[in-house]
Image (cartoon, one colour):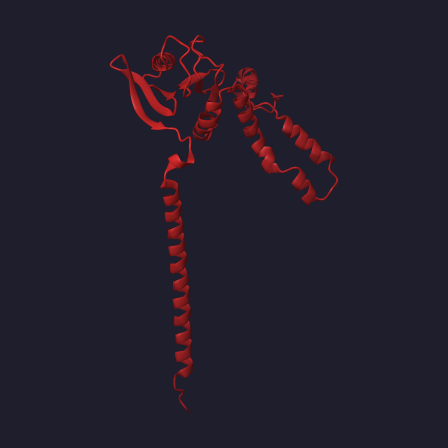
Length: 263
């Protein structure tokens, strides 16, 4: 509870407004993990030595658990095995490095238009506002379309909806992005406003790797090149030390063999 006499806001007359904002600040905190409660209880009840305690309650597991829980929740809603095998991990690796981004698979709709339900969305959530930035439509290999609109047309509609929402927020030079997956072929798109006209462009395309043989010899060559450089560097360092050692020995030998002057 905020103590008014000890708060600096009492001097500027903003104490009441600060108190009203406290509930908003704390509302964005993540839910307390049940694993954390179990971990804390185990710590308090354990009577063994420190090493045994460390093995039973690894802090690494504690840190990793929320991420694993997030992944389990995502996979619980991702029913399509194709999405699980080829896309979920890929997109998670790209966008999970920053805590500012959130992802939603299926059963999710746009904040600005609940009728649109893409297969995947990327959004940010400052305070209580959900702002969609990217979308994805997926058509696994061999799966027929279930809608009158093609996925490409759906992407265009979704991009326009996201862009309109950003413009309504006052972002004049905003851009939104989309991913189209048809079988193993992936295409990326962007949309912005150009002279008051919606402009959708294709950024690039690539194929998902479904077999190890499709990765070619690139990864092997890269690791071989790195290993060769390491061996070369170690060899040069070893030769330098050996040469230095021989030079020092020769200098010492000459100093001991120099003629001594008799008094």
